[in-house]
Image 1: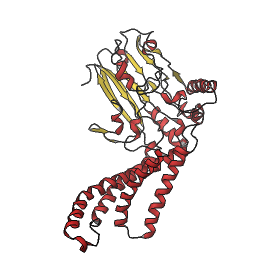
Image 2: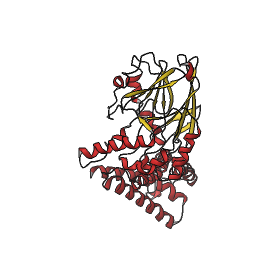
Image 3: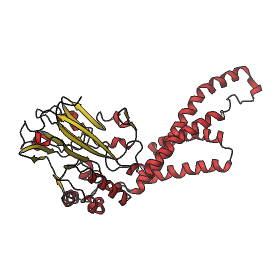
Image 4: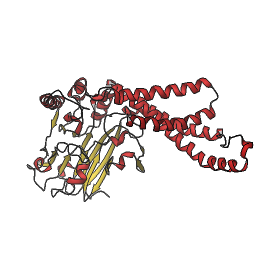
Length: 411
């Protein structure tokens, strides 16, 4: 009750400030009523679905949209709060001045009225995040982008010069609500014509059943040298309640079976070799290893026990924190690591080649794109699907194509 009381008080303050801008510009009593009706309905829906209803089976689409529409009104109102508070920086000193200089002649109305043009500007600015969030829910979550990178390695085997990898990550099939859009994304993956397709985990939100409607979609994925995958933190079923340990174990085994049915070779702390013209590169896949309370089932030493230190190595590890905390310190020198997990928070601002920002950078040092350390590289894929918030704003779903080239290391 205390938690909800605090929540209502905080949002109430935000709402009252936002309403002041709305009321200053709008003179219709009916629109004022609509403002409060929409706010109450969205907040009530959020409270009931996101926290109130039983979520033992995880997020439903109803939970997602309740959260999405809450975000759609919260962010614009926070902009209005900031702008209205900024106006109060000037209004409050004037109110104090009138209190001491005008006395009773002001009849208690010491606080100057809000200026209409400032409220108009505030509403105009707030409309930008409002429409952006709605676009993200309606279109952004399927706005697939193909991002291409070329990486140079002096010790890349000659036979693999020009070798192309397509990486996808974080499918989260339980969140999808448009089969045709997902099919389009799969076709876009195949159009890249890469030599191999690597999937870096989180194929479901919580339960294997979420994947069933999409098996015949994802089994259309094709690559000359095959499809390989690893598990992400959501694949283990750790975030919902199970009637028994056996049920949870069966769910994971069913997930492994479905991945095989799709065509993925699932690497569980193990390795494979990709061979071409008598040369090879090592492909290593670890189970999830994540800092900050996430599952640490990944075992890098076990996964690499069948490869040589001199082999050219590509590592698949779902959580990029693994790279920073274990991989780059390892004696084996993993040339390229492929991760996902962060989704880029599904919200941010990107200007390709110039600027990249998302709040998730405060949680993850490596959160989207290519990073380098001691001659080792990681690509953090922004994810194919989405989770919780049913949309994407500025950080679009990603299909990564990486071409390996033999030559002087990247600058």
